[in-house]
Length: 196
Image (cartoon, rainbow, N blue to C red):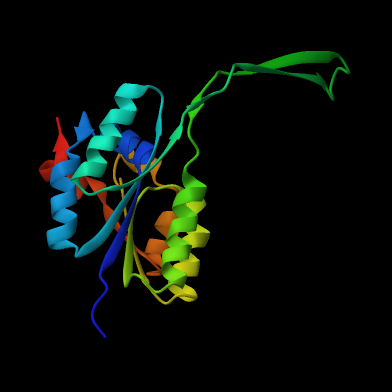
C-alpha cells in the first residue's frame, strides 16, 4: 500500500498568538506550505481562521490559491459582561459586593471544524499522520482518538519554552511526555518561517 503522507491542520488564531508571543510579527505561510510539502510529506494543509472584514477574507483566499484548504468563519464580537457577586464574610457577617468585568472579545470558534475534519479524514483512512499547529488543550481527546483508535501518529507544533510556552496546554505537554503524541517546539521552525 502506498504511503498516504501527512495531513496538516492549522488553528490560525492560535498560531498567530504563538508566533507573536515568540517575538515574530507573522508567519510566512508560503514558506511554511513549501516546507510542509517537501520536508513533512504533507498531502493536504488545512487552515482554520476567522475573518472580520474583506481584507482578512482576501488574505485567506490568497492562501487558498497557494494550496491551503481554508476553513473560515466570521469573527463574532462579544460585548462586555459584568458579573456581580454578593459574599458574606464568615468572620464579621457583613455582606460585600464584588464585581468582575469580562471585557468583550472576538472569536471565530473554528475548533469543532478542525476536529471534525481530523476525525472524518482519519476514519476514511486518508492519512498516515496528522500535524497540528495549536497548543490548545481542547484537542487532547482528539489526539488520543487518533493515536489509540485510528492508530495514527500525531505531531503538534506549539511554543514550549519561556513565557510563550505557557500558550501550550499542560495536557498537550503531558501527552508529549507520555509519548502518546510528538510535541515539537514552534520556536524551532520560526527562524526559517517566521517574519520579524
